[in-house]
Amino acid sequence: MNIYFSCSLTGGRDDQPVYAAMVDYLLAQGHTVPTAHLAHSEVMKEEAEIDPVTVYRRDIRWLDECEAMIAEVSTPSHGVGYEIAYALRLNKPVLCLHRRNARVSKMITGNTEPTLTVEAYEDEKGASGTLQKFLETKFVR
Amino acid sequence: MNIYFSCSLTGGRDDQPVYAAMVDYLLAQGHTVPTAHLAHSEVMKEEAEIDPVTVYRRDIRWLDECEAMIAEVSTPSHGVGYEIAYALRLNKPVLCLHRRNARVSKMITGNTEPTLTVEAYEDEKGASGTLQKFLETKFVR
Image (cartoon, rainbow over all chains, first blue to last red; front, top):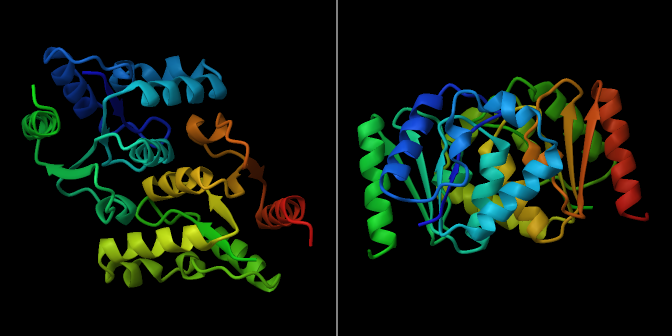
């Protein structure tokens, strides 16, 4: 499957290790993740060198093409919030994952869009289990 | 005019004084601002007492009803990013304002949606001037 993975860049990178673990898990399961590079620790330097319109158009194209979106929402981000609304508008299945103790916007936790799932996780292993369950529920393999 | 003002809540409240100044300016000009209470310093306690689905449905209804959206985007926020995408989908005029030195997501700064305007400001007075110019440009009075 083609999965758009979304995580905070400009908003903060404190959760970068868990982003990398999630993307590694998806890739190991054989999925295509066009945004895989966004989970890497060195991404901020790479992305800083690309002009904003190019990044915007690239990410919108990837969202249009994906079969599902997975967003890590523990760290606030305008870009991730924007992308969640954009994907839901296209009726794509969207999974928002956050650390159990993270404070998450009520526009996410109270959202009633039918293709949205919001789940908390305790650790990287728990997050991988939630990813697996989401993909199996949404897509009969 | 009915103007939806959007600012960070869960994402952080460091810019609260400028939110209040912007809303006070809009109200003084005679506009209706359903989200005016979100600019107050005591809002976090009030909003914490409302369940997430009620907040989500209330904010979506206000977005559906508004004539324009003004978002302060200096502090990252999933909710604000979500609302920007939602308002642009409805072809509403959207003004995103940020402090000159703030780092803003490329999904905002590189966004090519035709009804979006992004502007930096130096101080509260400059922000008010930009608000005024946006409203005059978008709406012949």
